[in-house]
Length: 105
Image 1 (cartoon, rainbow, N blue to C red):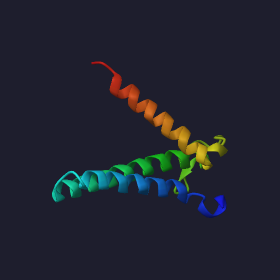
Image 2 (spheres, rainbow, N blue to C red):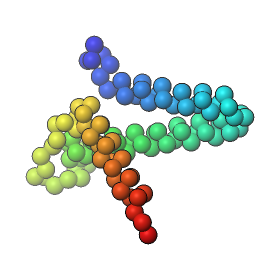
Image 3 (tube, rainbow, N blue to C red):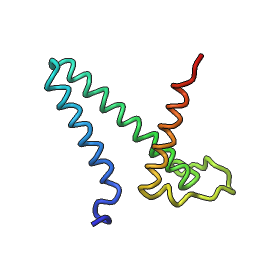
Image 4 (spheres, rainbow, N blue to C red):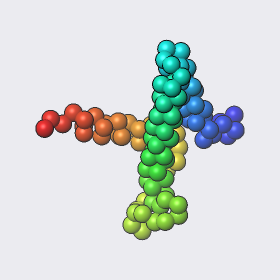
C-alpha cells in the first residue's frame, strides 16, 4: 500500500489541514475575509512545501533541477529521500525560526 500512496500522503495531509482551516475561518467570518484567508493559507503552505522540498532535494542529490549546488565530493544523504527527511528538515527549520524570532535586540 505504501508504494501506491508513497509521496502523496504528505500532500493529502496538507490538503486536509488547508480545508479544515478554511472551513473554520469561513464559518466565523464574512466572505471577503474568508477568501483572503484561504489565499494566504494556500500561498503559505505552498511556499513552505517548496522550501522543504528544495532543501531535501539539495541534501539528497547535491543538485536542484539537475544543476549541481554542492561540491562534487558531497555524499548524498539517503534519509532525505525518505519521509524521515521531511520530519528532520521541518524540525530544523522550526528550530531556526524559533532561534531567529526569540533573539532580543
